[in-house]
Length: 185
Image (tube, rainbow, N blue to C red; front, side, top):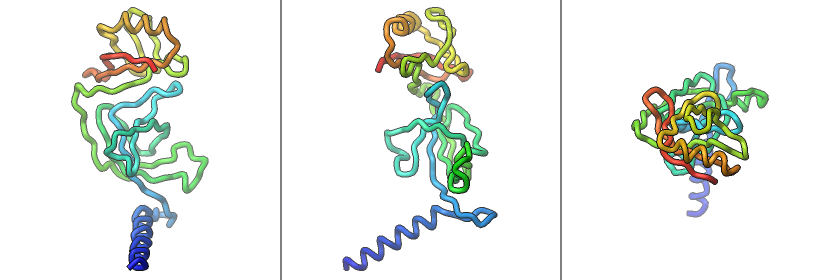
């Protein structure tokens, strides 16, 4: 019985591996896998990166910040994507993109009032520009945000601490962000 289970486990592993690989038109073998991309990007190291889940972590509570480009993928904020990608690093480790879109499995719009957190200061570096106290802020020179009723608190926090500052936001209808709360880490 034990021998039969070992053979069955080996068969399952080999079948799974073969199903995760396909040959392209040059008869090269590539690994495909599922990737979930969240409805917003995170500000990290002076650029926006994807917030993702991969393979077995999809559907869980853990998300990772990933800095990569996905060939043939056009990201639209406000949607959660499940996509199948091809790992291009197998062909050439020097490629800058690393991933190529195979297909969009699903594209789901999030509710307009869905909140999310974005770094505003990390490792002592402000990831926003604007006039402190006035309220015309922009994250990484790309996304405007309205500090609303938190402008004074935000200005005081920026002036009083060198710690990381994280804003909780909701997306405005024009694509800008509205600040809902602040935290320091």
